Length: 323
Image (cartoon, rainbow, N blue to C red; front, side, top):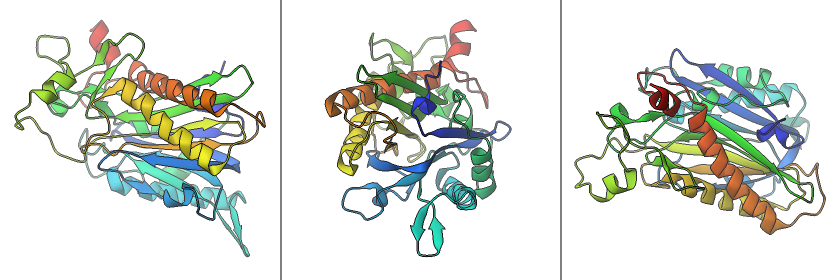
């Protein structure tokens, strides 16, 4: 059973993973084009082609979303996605040219292993060549390869994370799914139980509460700014307007806030995209779709932590709990 982003009809997903250098990128493709939306909430975002997705702009279809490591350098990987889609004849018809609409967001993974290797056009192309409609691999792969969380005391006390995905089918038949690469300053909490899942690691074992740590901080613990970001996509096969898709993008941030604390800080660049392929039910309850967007986003965040593996000397929660 496919419980990942590709459970949404019309979507394909693929990763490029470089574990040797702790970086990578992930692409989600809709060859027929999807109605797109975006909501940027973090204080330090790195994005490409986001204005096109907002209401009142002319181009109303997006053909791919790229999530990438490599900080601002990783936006170059989108050029490889554009080149691939153009070769496939996928894009917006602009006179004699085919122009693929590829939106992208990046996270900061520089320095976990190295700072001078980042995804570029060839890596973006490789992610496209690996893309298919089957269940997507999760964990420390693709854009989540170098992702870490709980950095209130710096990278030395952080926890390895990755990229996760989850999906739901509503009673009316619509499928809603999310994919999230989690590289947050904050810690992670189970939104069902309230339990702390990952916080800054204590030397003697266990986690510190990241919210308490921040609220009691006198400023001496602040690490480098602009080194965190959670990026992702919520998607549905329902038929939605541009305004409705942007509404889902905004609601999906509730799923981040339920599981990541603190969330949307000035030290993060949190960005969530949305896509509606229109290949499922032609009528759907927007309220139910919104609630599902929140839930699958929260589940995807936790999956990113549960499926991660240690890298660069930073252990995952699985390794900590069984170590």
